[in-house]
Image (cartoon, rainbow, N blue to C red; front, side, top):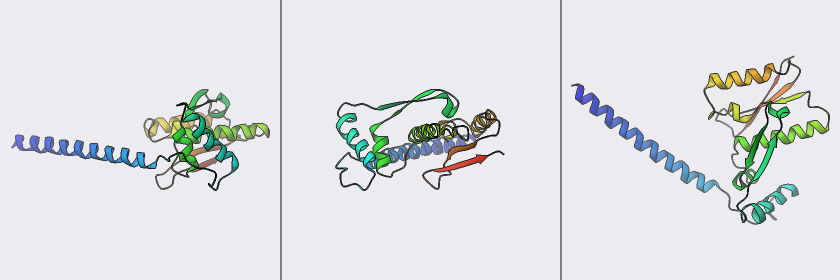
Length: 178
């Protein structure tokens, strides 16, 4: 009788592996369909700066197999780091498709630069999307990282933290600890 349960477990395990492999393949195919082909952006309803960025992707990044590199200063997320945007990140953003944490981080860096020019950095803090992403560590680890970031401020800032409960592409949580 013990052999039957072992056989069933093996069979079930094998079936789960097969389903997982099939799902992974389906996800890859789905991702391939989502990548926008770079084309004529002149007719696209978008700000001229976005059209220019798309033309830059088409004329420079893709032909030369390049990517965009950004340095995110310590004052943005609490630690220096470099990050990269791929041409696909930009075309997905331009096509109003789901975007990744890297695109959100670069946008948050831009917002920080705008706040810096307005001398308002002390009012708003940012939490790195990579630290709260579902793909980074356990819930407890992510919670500790968020708590540590909030504790460094002394409670004088409103925090902007990306949050995706799975129902929307992107939301932001604002925390005011006054």
